[in-house]
Image (cartoon, rainbow, N blue to C red; front, side):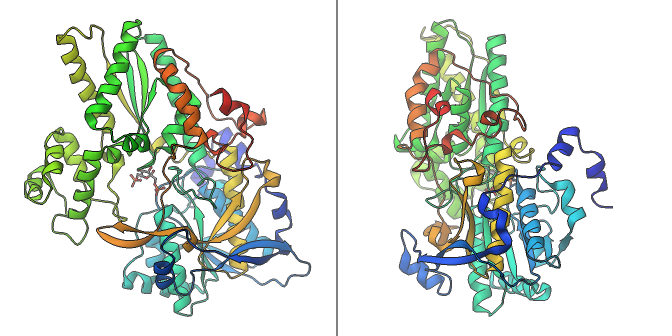
Length: 565
Ligand code: FBP
């Protein structure tokens, strides 16, 4: 049996979580009687005409809310679900919420999981999900029930293959669990299926630990809360270690792609000595030299007080925000786009050929980088055209530059302390952990709302659960057209409609709270250890939502925790 060893090897905590029923918003308690109620037509904030032209059948649709209606007719539904992109804790609960809702609608409904991400759609490889299949995975981390993948369904042929699979399985709906790029793909699939007269509707679910799939409709993507809680526990432990041994500077790179949401949330949770926020550095046009100086200044200031240790958080995408490096990466992205000659496995030798195509400024920036970083920058782009920032050792680069700077200061008598840096990368270990109570509940509801949208046969929508800082019972649900969240951006060197990535806003109250505290944290240790994630006990601790989410909704009361941070 495929899943028996997973069941047999479950730890007591996994078993306990598996047996726990997620909390749901009150409205979902009557899921069988909910009927879609279309409200106002919705439009994107920019590029309306282009989006209307690109999505003639699915642009400008209405907001969908739900009303309770008695004696709704029911029929069995056939639905497919795909997990797309990087893992995010809670994915299995999206499937559980979807499965349970479909069963509640009609016991003969069927749920097919596509294997290994969108590639499973192209190859029509599925797993029929039944009670016994999903049960061991309830409230569990990872995406291992189905697997995930980054294949992008984009070409005419891939769209045709997908259509063939939908028709072969006779699906009423396809639920795409993914980030901004995968949900952009979902919008394209919805338009394609509708144009072809295929009955399959497409619904997206907002997933990514990065927290960058966020807008006026999506308060937070699932997985962000758990990943930040896991990283914050580890950062808190490092702080304690630093405070105990008093001899190491921990340079911690945090996963999260371009946006610094994870770094900001972890900073609010743990109060490290320094946290670099990529968006702020870009705003200030800080160069690599400026950042090196900033860190070296802190090391000197702490050393003058006898503190030869510290913890520094570095967002994974920092490198893209440094003006000279950002420009270099932009130029490299264009040159390394799939249709360009340098795409395959470029090495620094191959880069000699690239040199002729870089601007003088970018070439200069490239030449000043250590070989290690140069090679990492030339790695293949991901299928969505993104540079693989997870593969660039920014933490090592900064450590090397700060060390050099301090050596120079030592020669001129400006620094006489010691500097022992240790590098860390907290990434994959946060993506597949047991989902927090928040993510477990949130994901289960997202799955149920996706099922409702399929049942109501609307297409090109995202499943939305909102008012997340209220008790779960008071959470609200709706469907928002995916095209509403889009704009038109340069990708792979071409203009494409995409869902906009949300970056850290420097006027947000979470950033402001951090800004007020951070200079104090540099020279006086205010370390905070959130400890391991809790699943029972004081709900104020165990069910808390991300600190940076507390201010994102207009009705939020800034909680004591955030004020204290
Ligand atoms: P998604 O955008 O697909 O959710 O992925 C998130 C992420 O974990 C990023 O934080 C990270 O940069 C990237 O995936 C790593 O990709 P890979 O899993 O291909 O190494």
